Amino acid sequence: GEDVEQSLFLSVREGDSSVINCTYTDSSSTYLYWYKQEPGAGLQLLTYIFSNMDMKQDQRLTVLLNKKDKHLSLRIADTQTGDSAIYFCAERGGGNKLTFGTGTQLKVEL
Amino acid sequence: DGGITQSPKYLFRKEGQNVTLSCEQNLNHDAMYWYRQDPGQGLRLIYYSQIVNDFQKGDIAEGYSVSREKKESFPLTVTSAQKNPTAFYLCASSSRTGSSNQPQHFGDGTRLSIL
Image 1 (cartoon, each protein chain N blue to C red):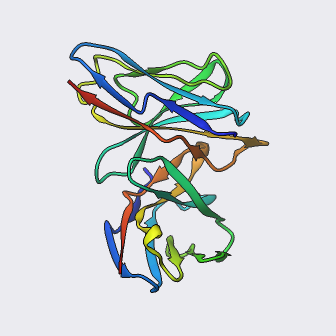
Image 2 (cartoon, rainbow over the protein chains, first blue to last red):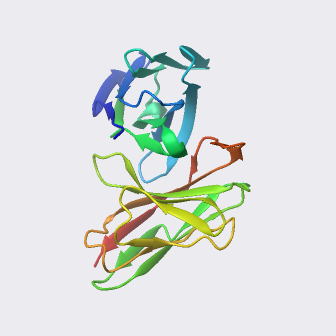
C-alpha cells in the first residue's frame, strides 16, 4: 500500500529557514499536502501542490516536488516561534483518500 | 463562521460502553471523514462518506460505526468492540469538483480516554 515517511524532529533557531522533508511511494499521487497541527488542535491546511508542478511558493512557504524521486519538501523562511508545531505531509492517491506521514515536530529556539 | 465542529472536546468511556463523537459542518461539503491519531503516528482513516446515506470503511474500521443521514453531520460511534479506543479523533470534510475531492479541512478533534 501507500507509504509516506517523514523525520520525527527538527530544531531550528528563530529567523533561520526550516526545511521539512517527506518521501512517498504512490506513483499515482495526484496532490500532495502540507498540514500544520498545534498542540491539542486539529490540522490546518498550509498548502498543497499538484503532481505536475515542481514548485509552489506562498509567502514564507515554498513547496518543492521531485516526482522522479517521490520527494516533497516544505521550506519555511524566517522561522518564528509561532511556527513551532507538528507538520504533516499527505498524499492523495486512488479513491481520493489521503495517506499521512507520521508528522515532523518543529521546534523553534530563540 | 463556516467550519467543522467536533464535540465534545474530551470524552471518557467506561469498559463495555459505546460512545458517540459528533461532527457537524456548515461548509456544504459533500465528503466527510473520520481519522484516529495516536502519539508519534500519522492519521489513520476510520470511515469516510462521499455522499449522504453512503459510507465506506477506511483502514481501521473495526470497532467503529458511522451514519450519514444528513449532509452536515457524520457521527462516529466507538463501540465496546474497540479494545484500545484511547486516541485523538479528527473529523474532516471536503467539497467535490466533478469526480475529484478538494483539500480536506479538519475540526479541532475529540480526545477519548478510558476510565
